[in-house]
Image (cartoon, rainbow, N blue to C red; front, side, top):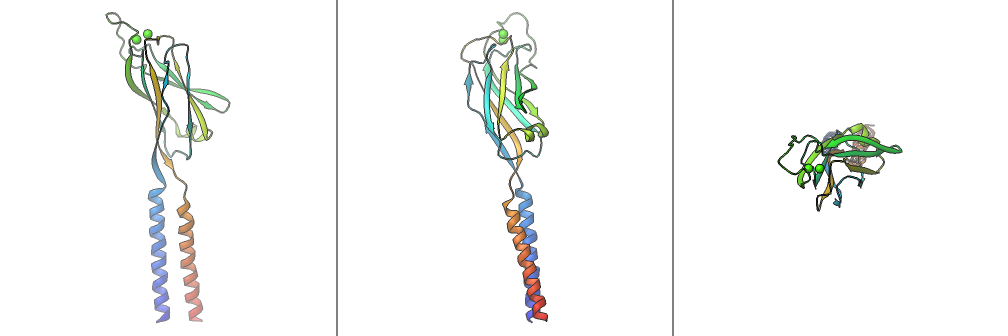
Length: 187
Ligand SMILES: [Ca+2]
Ligand SMILES: [Ca+2]
């Protein structure tokens, strides 16, 4: 009877451990969104630097969105995006450069509000320092047309720390202890 009871306890314990690991598996990744502060003076000759803190590594590529109101209504008006990597800024490409050209008729220095995205590869993102900087550089066609602004949002799925793993292992250890106890009961 004692052996049967302990056997049942062992089975229940191992099952509990399996469930625990299953839960850990579903909690290992979570969506993360970081939004910068808003900066003004989005026009040629200025650079805007935004500081971010990365707590966890990304498990896939990161979407960088630039929200802005500035003189960005034409295809030749854009903002360069770069990120501080190693000991210098690495160019990630431009945003707001895919607008359809519209020569003539409309002034080319009017404010336009919009959002455009660019991708930061997982490998680049995960190699960044914990505190990192993203720089926006309006190109020479982006005029000072009024009260402009820009801010950045980063969206990705991050790998969260796994404190539950210790609990899971402890649970397995407990199962092991009970199995050992069962064996000692046999002898
Ligand atoms: Ca324009
Ligand atoms: Ca312009």
